[in-house]
Image (cartoon, rainbow, N blue to C red; front, top):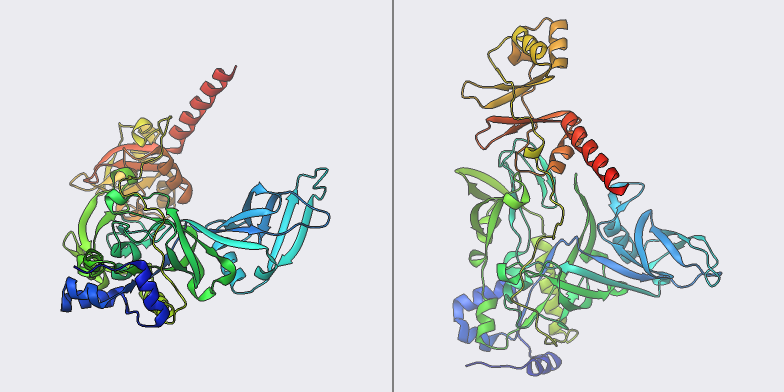
Length: 507
């Protein structure tokens, strides 16, 4: 039975005899030599991941101005940082968008600019008090001008990510990237066999006080990450490090089109091989790592698991979903993950990076809970009109015009012979068709129809109306049969009733 201590491994690091391998190589060694021999042979396994880590940011101390200011609000390159800490301290979040450029630039880019040595424009306004009389300031700062710049990321290096795909007929823009309609792509994240928490799933060596590689600098795990859910293999880490020691090579601001700003961060964690149990866990391969494929076209609370898949399958570039071959795309960089694991290996071998065991283990029994909501959100079914007039795709424009006149409804869903939604026609379409002398309804109807689900929150339906600048949504069931209609008029009535009720409650 092989047993080592962290002190023995650090002694080997000091005298240059330590044997370090990257996590992908460890899986090969375990396969070739077996767990017992691998535990004797290897002292440290290095891991690495480089991907979008939205829950990231930096605590900054700017120093006192003359005369001093107590900052009420502060902006760095027009990106606002949170100032409710102290007079000249702030926290800049990676996902905060620019007030000028929106999602084209944000906190992640500002952090990258600072690390790259670029000057950053700083503006602040204050309250004006006896001890902090100044009310505004504008200046230019660089990273070297700051007293402290401490990266503190509340949730990084997630243990496992689900794969995202999209069953709907419209493109979705999400934190998992752009999802094309009708299962035309599947996006995933994480470095697979190199990911830190896949190599220590029970948090035996990764915990509070574990020394890590963070964006090119030394850093530490300071606790469990937010949304830490180890029961479901979704553990996360809270990490910290000195921004002044980091490298822009391992830290990049980024924008997900249609979604927002994020930041790519590089994290590497050494796993000391203290015994055969740890050797076995670090011997994991991409074929052993399983995750779930989720349909992001369905509301979160009802999102179905389409299938389970391994990282080996994901990395092949194609997976099968409901009998269809779907291309896969990683949001993480395998090249950078390998580079981080290799760089950490070099630093340990050169005696520049010593290992530390946790001073406290991370919990393994917590479950991520949804937000407690004391007020129920109205659903589409609470507002929709259930008696909906439809028309056949074989009907004429005259038939549609007559139906609109009889019902005074301006949006008519068009259905196929199987009663499935195939389009929609409006009063405006009819007017245009008459002017252009069209006769068949199929010529003028809109075929790409935005729809709603009866169980989805009303807010989602409102967002669709606003996003696509439309005033009605057919409500369909899983077989695309029309079961209702929701319009901006019904929504306005509901909002008006709520406001009148709230006003009566106040008086």
